[in-house]
Image 1 (cartoon, rainbow, N blue to C red):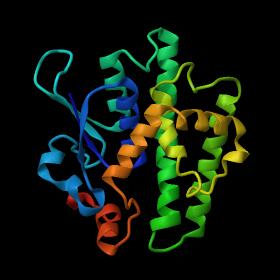
Image 2 (cartoon, rainbow, N blue to C red):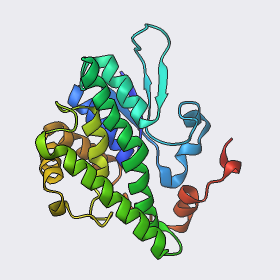
Image 3 (cartoon, rainbow, N blue to C red):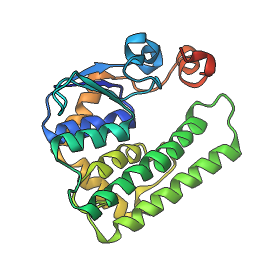
Length: 232
């Protein structure tokens, strides 16, 4: 059994995508980021960076005590190795998949995240910051589009790399990106959206959080005003 500590963000969706695809039993423990659940001691014991997602595997492969894992990329890799699914077993295919997983973790996620922040949540609308992150998001979309010109998925068969990337493309409109400008990416996007596991994963999100937009001053303070003093 996997205990999933989750909220309805792109990084959270990565893990429900995997768990639904793999048919693994799991229990969701909602971590409401807008209300500060990520700072509760019991969550910090699992995820010391006070970020979701995190998991606790109650039945790890070594037969030992339950094992916690935080950081979405690490969780995807852990689950892929645990199940033997969605990560190629051949040497070259494995590292090709990991390249694109890390591309998302180190590039698309942070850049699109800053895009979201400066366009939607920043107290002051800074034209330079908005232009910078909208343009970089677009550049990364173009890199992905080029990659998908001659293949159905980013690294051969459907994999943890696709699961990592897809949730960050879902909010393309709020990132000021048009999928019609990236036809190969658009084809890939529609193929993943049509998968039954994808539909189940996003239905779970609707059940847990029916109002996903940050909407008050206290939420903004919790989410966007953290300093070193908040690390406890």
